[in-house]
Length: 309
Ligand code: AMP
Image (tube, rainbow, N blue to C red; front, side, top):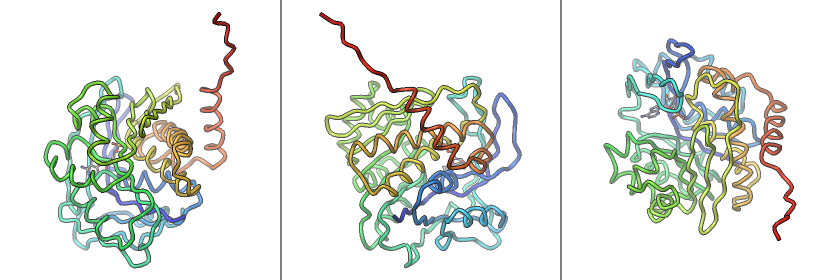
């Protein structure tokens, strides 16, 4: 089925306790598209890069069946650049540089061939751009999922609240959920956020897994305990790409299917953190992913023998 992804295609420079990179390929849209490419979908992307973006990476995306008709290449302009430094615990990071460049005046264009897409993943971008994309689709997708971050809560909260009214699934981390809701307890935060629009809420807790809320239902998926976490950049986007890639390929938007989608997203995210940037995602096979999903199943599966008398 067709999945439309909107998100940044970018250059990143990353510093972790294990090392430092120069400009490498990054961007929420890139991670989402790479993760979703493990599933059998027609994938379309809407984004923008500058003239400086390597054609080789665009070819890599094309080779993974990502349609780039909606990716604008701006002559004489520079690609979005983000730089971040992780603290020793690897769970928190500081943004060192955000150069919007081509993203500053990004006007998302939806090619005719993208119209009628069934599933929409709105990567972390300005909530105004995210809304424009929804409004420019002639038919509302069956499921609209969205990511955002505290940056937009700080500078565009009203805009963000308008966009939240239009979507189905919000995927954010615990810190963002607390900021958006003004509630510390995540169960309370989830209630407040779902009253803003999204019927489904996924709260990611980094190495502590992810929670899914819908109606009176709640589901928890752990993160796979890993020997080494090298670079967490893009793990959240990879999770979202795996989640939506799975949903789009099964065409099943039930709560049970979303649970399986979360395990798929978590498995892909666990690969993402093992090397810098997109490196690991570019090198794993479908078989690697299948085996890791089995590890998740084994991690959480148990038989209960009741002896309470
Ligand atoms: P994550 O680690 O999942 O939060 O995603 C990191 C990715 O998000 C990096 O590759 C960045 O290029 C991208 N990114 C960071 N800040 C922004 C922003 N304000 N708008 C769009 N993309 C961003």
